[in-house]
Length: 378
Image (cartoon, rainbow, N blue to C red):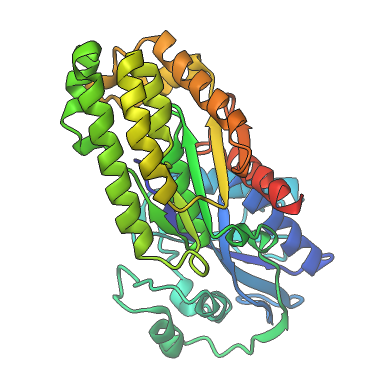
């Protein structure tokens, strides 16, 4: 499962409507580059290294799956579209917008195009002071100092004045109104990746299925008739125990919890894989378990068409999944949709992500958040 990077950007503007330039940059960064997690206050600072009008400056931290060089390409594109023209000279210049890539995790990157951490950050109060607002547990990988110490030792004596508070785009998406959200989907739908990303972005608790530990799973894909019943019974027992244990750690009325499964997925798969007499016995056991489980405040089903599911399964490369037939995935999808329709007491949201890639495309991730936001607003 791919993990996100924590990236700090520094913004500055001293031409035109400085506040509008900064706000438009924030909007484009959040929509196209990465999820803005925190934004500093907006500071007015004197020009650094040349005589010009004062700057508005801020810093922000984003989460993204992209590489540092990809982010550099993206921020240069944002600058160009906002009207920034970079001069050929090496001197400092006034600018409509300036977006600098300051940190990328705690990595050290030295290439012709990019130096990380930014080589002058320790000398620039207009970078360090906004970064202090971000309250990051970040250590400079070269100087081995944290931001407060870098700021204290900085030779820059510029006076930086707070002029405004900036709005974080995530403030308009109050997912925590649903204390407990369960995300579901077919094999290969990306639910675990999505849940992990949402948990990181919204500081949520996670409940993640430990499917890889099931010894019956590889055997099932080799001989479904023989291993279907022990597989489904073991999954039911494992899911019940894990959900009970994990949810017991949290306060369902105070904590914000996101899960990549719910107990009734067991019934969906069992209905597809078991013989009729086996399923009747199984459902008796399931009904007993299901009554005792806390219900999610929102149940999100990530629908993907079978062709896309097969592509995703092939990409993630689990050997025992490579021969899953298309008709099996079709049956699972149908099973989910049929069962969801029958659950009148379950708050359900179905999102079609067949043409979405929320790892590579930030806009696709925001589409999912917007769909949930619309559900909150209803």
